[in-house]
Image: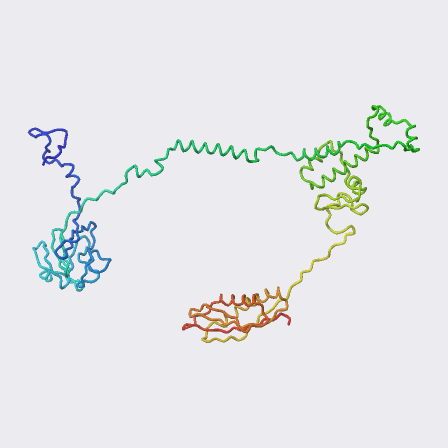
Length: 474
């Protein structure tokens, strides 16, 4: 069979396509035997047929038997459930065989039967042990199963299987990232514009100061009220006297056109009073927020003495003289009383006479006590008295909690406690309940269930705990 020529060319007297002497082909290098100690090759024969053949790549002991943990599972009772047929001691294999096994083994001394090896074998327990070299081979018969073994060179390690690059790439390699990025920016741009259209963060801010000031200016610039003078009215003497006396106001008013509406001093004062009243009402309705402060800081709003307004009752309402700030009430200034100025609005301490509300006195409810009677147990428990005494503060707390809802409560109860063999409380039943509410009884039962006694052993114990609850001082 021809081999692939290795090298750059053929030597003298050598035909093309032939290997040079000593040249190793690629196939020969691929199947070159691995250096190192030899390993076992074992064949399992049953019924005259080889049913299993295995190369023990890792040098380790070979076990046989009926156990599933054995390397070779055989249906034979002649060996233990897990028997080391080939045992690795250090770096050398040893053959272990029992009485009743048959076979032949080829050693350096020659071919020998198993029966003949018993004389030169080392006895280990009930088994015989013979050292094997790498040239040893043979067969061992165990019941109806035959083991064929020999030492062979270890097979070359198989390369780890790898997936194709098209499969290893996964989903990420199949994505068109340029198109994905463009689509993502497009979605962000479009949905951002739509969100901006339907949101209010782009709306201009509302100037509250301007709105309040506009309302105040609108109330001041109301048109004058047209009053009709009766034709048959007789002029009063004061009007006649005022008409005969020259005044600057009358001269100014006479300079108007005929038929034009003129506003008298009385009407101007009335309109100014109405404007001031509306201004104060709006300031009170807005509760003195930042917008009101801005309106008050305007230079075109005439300052007013609020204390004087409160005392006189002008500019607030026609029915009362109180100055009420805010729709929900607040400071009230009544005319004619001490501290009626603006500085007294925030005084919440007593009335004008300085009287107080008195000293606060805490009232305590009734408290009770828990009295524990003598306990009885079906099986003695060493620390029963100490554990029951430790439960007394919890009983008292349950009773005091019940007194908060029923101050006249008093009564007694017996807790039948079942203690498990390990000392834990398995049940706490209430009996002979008198005068106590169900909440107090349930609280006491919970306290007993959480207790821990010493282990009574056997089938446990039953402890009866009588408790009487009385109010302190009775």
